[in-house]
Amino acid sequence: SQTIHQWPATLVQPVGSPLSLECTVEGTSNPNLYWYRQAAGRGLQLLFYSVGIGQISSEVPQNLSASRPQDRQFILSSKKLLLSDSGFYLCAWSSGGGQGGELFFGEGSRLTVL
Amino acid sequence: AQTVTQSQPEMSVQEAETVTLSCTYDTSENNYYLFWYKQPPSRQMILVIRQEAYKQQNATENRFSVNFQKAAKSFSLKISDSQLGDTAMYFCAFGDAGNMLTFGGGTRLMVKP
Image 1 (cartoon, rainbow over the protein chains, first blue to last red):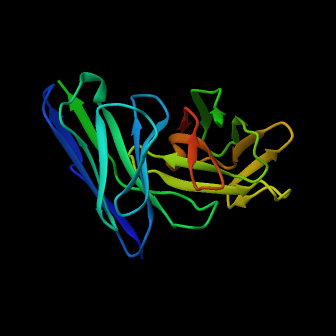
Image 2: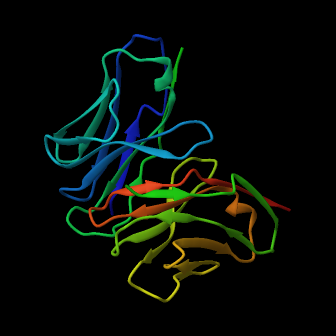
């Protein structure tokens, strides 16, 4: 069966520090991968998605970046965090190629920037 | 671009009763999919129910059913016989042909004993 894991679960970082959130998927190959951000009490905002290794599409211009160094690994990074980067970050995957497929979400990573 | 609107930020229902969560969307596409996701306090988002736009029949999954009105661009979720475990944030989502999902702002549902 397929599983998705992301870490760390909780992170408290000072303004200006770097960030690295990691997400891995197991039990499937060539998935579509996504990073969403959920601000407190609000919906989900798509940040990045990837349909293959090294292929990253950004939905929202910001100081965050994403990379996909391996087929089932998706990393969210920042060189210098801002206060506004605080939030709950969700990684998700879906089967590549087909339409209408559901997204499967990780457990989430709560980031607090102080 | 698609938009998804959930007009009810919070709702509550008594255990064993029925509750309906509203969702409207805006799109110019004809082929798409609609989803309801549940995010319980443990935070992991899970799929509740899925509807293909080309199907006229409303999707059902046990106690969960939808009322899909394509012309009105409405996609409401009905939860029958509400249980305490149904307490969660519920997100409506629109899926396009490229597997890109747009989410609504969510409705926080509280099931009261």
